[in-house]
Length: 409
Image (cartoon, rainbow, N blue to C red):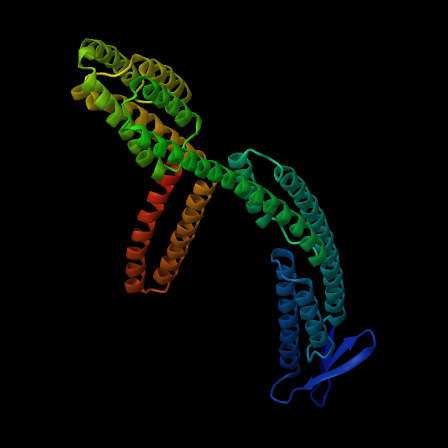
């Protein structure tokens, strides 16, 4: 018979473990000495110790969930309770009890952390909603639109709340964005309506100018043409695709009339030559406005020059196209600068450019991830194929980013 503090082997080879409740049979041993039997069942005890050690380390060093950790504790406790091993089983039970307390404490800490995180997310989303609702009434279309897009990105980065609260806040947030979007669309629709009204007014002015082009009532007709020019300027700009054509017809009708008048009043050639000299000076003065660096100042200066230009009168017929072409070139340059400024500050153009850029950036990021996975899997052929596709997408992205930069971004 052999024994140690935690177990013994009797003369029949039966192995016992000592517990607080008395001895319990854990096995029998017939193949060797009693000491070997005890050593064998003590190794089984050591195996349980190792498993508990491992679970303790997992609980302390990993993000093992409380549910999984408690399930592992229960599994080990059952193994300890039913163990065919020799050793201090009660000590193992106490370690499992302590580990259970640690797990429960960590679960409570995590619950508290989630509650704090949820409250912080709620406050953050309420602030986003309040700002979005304030921006919904803004007339700063570009800056407000950009800020609302930034708020959406911030919202996406915040944790979700309970479904009811999250849905209610998102509904308010989304409604504020919709209000702003509708107001912005209405604003630009109004601009489009103004340009359409300008087109209709200029169509009428062109029709009258063309009707007057054959008149021989020189004085009153010339005066009416000057009035028509003032009305033309007051009408505002039509859509770009109509403005130049209407202007050519309008100016063409005047040219017909004034050409006929010039033929009749050939004696005024001297005056017209003097006019030409003055208009050449004005054209040179206007050309100094280019390139346009200060649009507002250039527009005002050109308007003042153009008023003096209109007051000068006609020039010899053979010089008219050349001298007016110089002024019209300056006017076109200023108009193009206006169009460029309008495009640069147009939030819808910018939104489309940003949307395209975002899509291309997502595609580039996705391809890079696929390439990394292919290389990690040793699939070189697939990686090379994806890299060719990535090069094409990257080129498109670079072009899109350049366009976005030109829009002032």
